[in-house]
Image 1 (spheres, rainbow, N blue to C red):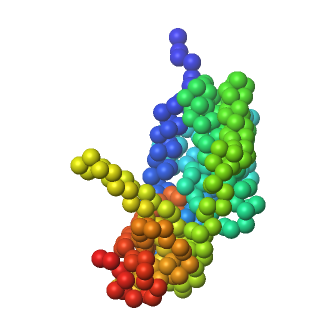
Image 2: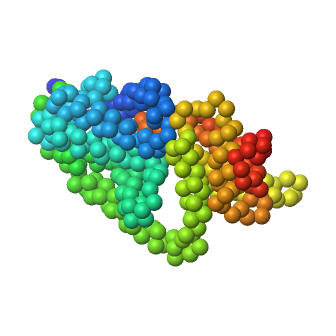
Image 3: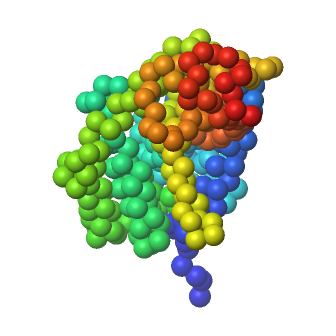
Amino acid sequence: MTDKPKTFAGFWPRVGAWFIDSVLLGVLGYVIGWAAMDYVSPLGADGRYIGLVIGILYHGILGSGFGGGQTVGKRLLGIKVVGLNGKPLNLFVAFWRALFLVGPAMLNGWNFDLTDPVVVQVLSVVAITAVLGIGLAQVYLILFGWPARRLVHDLLSGSVVVYVETREVPAPKGAVHAGVASLLVLASLGLAIAGPSMLKTWWPQAEGMFAPEQRVADAVDKLPEVGAVSVEKSEFTLYSDGKQTTTHTLIVTARTGKWPVDTDPLLAKIGAETVKVYRFAPGQRLTVKIVNGFDIGIASYTNARSVPYATDCVTADVKCLQK
């Protein structure tokens, strides 16, 4: 009596292959980031375009017939990607599959430097649906979508992950699981679309509250040494000896390419541009920060320095830096 041969890849081979591939892509990302630091650093989160392309090429080419349906992780753990007919995926379908495998991870934490409200709204809906909806669907399918465990990218590309010794792929059953995954994605899409209107209803003062911060970002962005700029309000409350002290701080963060030998002049420039266009509330403080590094999605590194800047200074004098 012989055991029934395994067909569909199990939970641990799938997760293990993903982990190995992520480590390899991370190493490649660090090599690229360090080698091209001066060019990648000013991009900020837009450097994730690089990681997105690398991830799609890696999973797409190796996941197709050209790579035998096996990334390095899948090859080491004895599994492969095939179509429902048991044959390797063609390159177009493999790239399509890779897009939905890599895309949601890249969108998580990707802050687009855009000002067009329509474009921002569309991208926000796409990002929330991809990160939250597809993310939840993936977790559900990998945990409960057995035996085939076809994830979102498998369902959309007509693929399935099997053991390498598999010669004939039985028709995978999982209509209920696919339905639950679809509901999770649709629910996230609905939340992404209705969320802004609900926020305005519950919190009317939120609309337009970011205009002053945007003026700061626009002013600092004009400095030739600066790439991506972000501006945020910070509130810190300290309780000591029964007393409550709350500090309000405006934090201006600017990415730069080559790290300056002397960072003080650039920090002073950023502070001066901020003070010129921003009206500070009584007691509100200003912190200017420069960041050098890279974020290409598959790898990231950050080197930063931040210094308080006197809000009553309007010149790029390093004496305005409160060290």
